[in-house]
Image (cartoon, rainbow, N blue to C red; front, top):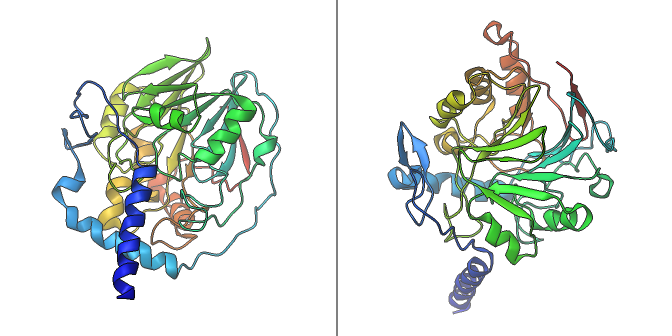
Length: 355
């Protein structure tokens, strides 16, 4: 009897949490990747979603993920160089990149300060006592950020859309937030405003020197159980006079890469490409690139220099803590990759791009 009531309490709790945290969904015209209720990925030239074709495949990694969280092998790591205090502004064509953590990168160029998918919370979760916790501190103190002009928010997963962090940055900096369709209303419900929603292929101008384009990614969205794919996910291109920056967001490798290639035939001066949370490949290959796919994207899109992101801070999948970087280093030693230029930064490290 006790087990019965405990089970009922769990079910009721899940229903309540789902109601509280779910994204209400985007309302707008249909498109080739939106059917009026759900957004879809692009597979083999058609609009589809992997959850329609292999739903059982998803159950194994979810169970494995739950078991791994109980028996994780990750260990807390110190910051290799301590926390960075970034300079206030960088003018001219130089790009100064500071890796904060996970997919959070401070980009400084042309007098503009940009943050990607900021997260400073201890857990990538709506609950303070449950969910993926961090194993390395942010490389920049949240309160020592330079003035932030705008934020690129790729999608609504908790390791990318961290409401606590966004509130702190909005309170201290009041930046513009560029994000994908369906997120503006959700953010506003938590007091986060000054948001611009973009669809794939849409572009906006921030200043005379800086523009932002939203580009496709192969992923999905969800804040709870019942809101999967009800808001859009994507990547961004920061358009600059001296060469563009590609922020892939969260993505698997897929046909959308050929779309981006056609949109930007001159390639990219710099790329932020994810390499972590890629095992088991049976499931993760659809939604997350590993080091192998990151190098393929680098070559396909004509990226001239890149850094890996989405590794080393949160334990989100089944590979060991050091596997993404170790695998990337192994690949970079191959003759076929002699012209591939990845700068591997850890939290708090900075890179200046002058070429």
